[in-house]
Image (cartoon, rainbow, N blue to C red; front, side, top):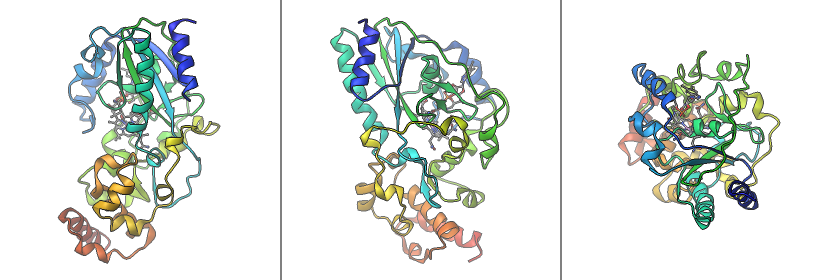
Length: 330
Ligand code: B12
C-alpha cells in the first residue's frame, strides 16, 4: 500500500469516506477574482481581507507539498417541515470541535509516517471549497456550495497541509448545467447569474443576516422562521435529493435544536445558553443573536406574546423589542 492508500484506509476505518488530495500551491488564479469582489463590495465581514492569506497555503506551512481535503457529512434528516427552525448544520455538536477531533487523529497517523501536518477547519483563511474542488471531493455549485456525490452539499470541509508528496486527485467539473433552481429559490436573490462567486452577494444571504449583529427592520419578515443559518439554496438543489445521511454520531441533532421552543429561546439566560446552544454550531455568535431571531419569529411565525422581553436585561434585546413593535404596528 502507498502513503495515499494508507491514509484513505485509516480515514475509512475511522468513519470518514470522502477524502481527496491536491497539490499545495499558491492559488494565483483566484487573485483577480478576490480583487474584483473587493472592488464590487461583495466581501462579507466573515471573509479574510488579505488576499495573500486567502491564496497562499505556504504562509501556514512553508514546506507544504500536499493538501488533503476531508468532507464531514452532517445531515441526519431531509425533513424540512418545521416552521421555526435552525438550519441543518447547527443541529448537532459544534462542528469545529467534532472535526478537530477527527483531524487530530488523522494528523497523528500522518506524523507516524514521517509527515508534518497543519490541520484547519474554518480556522484559517484559505478557500476551503475551492481546495475541496481541486481535490476531487466534489464540485462548487451555482449556489456556491461544495457538492459531493454521496452526501450532496451537506458536508463540512476540513483540510490538512502536509509536507508529504502524494499523488493528487483530479478536480470534478461543475455539473449544474442549465439548472438554476437555487437561484430561483433564494428569497433575497443573493445568488445571481454569472461566473460562480463573482456575482454572489453574501451580504444579503439569509444565512449571514441571521448571524449579523445589527440588521435593518426590512430583514425582519425575511427571516421567515430561520433562527440561525439558511438552507434554502441547498434544499432546492437536485443533487441534494438522493443522498446518504451522516453516520457521524456527534452530529446527531439535539432534540431541542430539532424542535425549537421559541418561548424558551426568546427568554434565554446565560445558563440555558451555555447548557444547550453554545455547544451547537450556532453558539459562536453568542446568546443575543439567537434571542433576537427567536423574538422576530415569535411575532412573525409563532404569534407568541413577546411582552416578557420588554424587561430583558440587555439593551440590545430591548432595542429589537421596541423596533419590532413599531414595525408591526403593535
Ligand atoms: C464567510 C463564510 C460564509 C458567509 C459567506 C458565504 C459565501 N457565499 O461565501 C456566510 C455567513 C453567508 C456563509 C454561509 C454558509 N456557509 Co459558510 N463559510 C464562510 C467561510 C468562513 C469563508 C468563505 C468565503 O471566504 N467566501 C467568499 C467566497 C467568494 O469564497 P470561497 O468560499 O472561497 O468560494 C468561492 C471561490 O472558490 C470561487 N471559485 C470557485 N471556483 C472557481 C474557479 C475560478 C477560476 C475562480 C476565479 C473562482 C472560483 O467561487 C466560490 C464560491 O463563491 C468558509 C470557510 C472557509 N475558510 O472557506 C465557510 C464555509 C464556506 N461555509 C460553510 C457552510 C456549511 C455554510 C452554509 C451552508 C451554512 C448555512 N446552512 O447557513 C451557508 C451556505 C451559503 C452559501 N450558499 O454559500 C462550509 C461549506 C460547506 C460546503 N459544502 O460548501 C464552509 C467551507 C465551512 C466549513 N469548513 O465547512 N458562510
